[in-house]
Image (cartoon, rainbow, N blue to C red; front, top):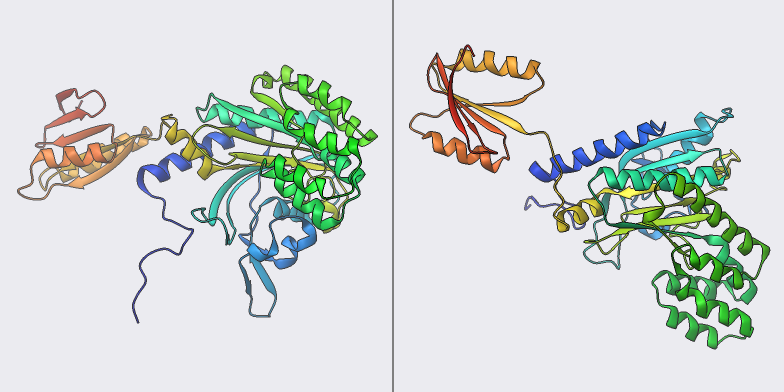
Length: 414
């Protein structure tokens, strides 16, 4: 039987410089969320299938990786971490009256069938605020997204905010069958407004409802679009949604985050469990959102705890693509390399220990007989090292600063 040495379709190895960048970004993101008072939580990579069942409103069950345990229970790799955190919060913190603030990082798995080229395993870094239904909670989430993206080095990005009740009010007033509603949601989600209008033309829908759908492409932009949306708010729920967005925007000004915010009243979110505001963050260099989030006030009810919640997930892989294409460098820990021979081995180990005590990253390499020093210098540059220290004899060393190119000789005692 032929041994397969490559990875399955949709997954890949991440190593060397790319892996260092990824871990550095996750650390930076974690620092921001900790500053807001969020605490880390880890949930299992796989759960009982029921955690992601159809009524939860997460990823389509057809795209889940499903398998069985020894007892015959159906398990699933998590396609989305929010339901897992909701399950943990509802069961482990069921008596907690104060808001819960969680942050996490983990891989998600979606068995795409129609999206060629998309990874099936992605890393998500996210936050969940459980137990608060308020504009303050909504604004905190969006402000955190802005601060987190800035921390990674991004300067040009846009956080687009909507509210599911605005579009839902129009869909409800249209009195369409469920299949047509889902089709219209899909078309609008893909920005195919013409397709949605054509579909409505085939249906017996009131003129004012068609006008409300037709205006959706214009309800995207700065705070001014909220005034325009007010004219087409056909229910009290829609009017309340617009007012909430106004209040959120006011708080975001206090957070100094409003410069990165726009509004999109056609948004309905990617998950069925969203109930209030929804938001996505976009930047150059990637065709998809780098952040997805929203309010999900009824999700925890599915796990036995009635409490409002809101959260977001940063798709780390998309963020890395954007940073790379925008040529934004990510400073990682620079290693130093000590090359030694048989005679200088003792000094090399002692010197490396002294450096490590001071927090310096040191890689020890024993020189092979007959190999020139330039070979190790080339290797050090390839590994993005900061310096190459070459122990010539028991008393002296030569150091090359690989960033500036400066070279100097010093006594080992120094």
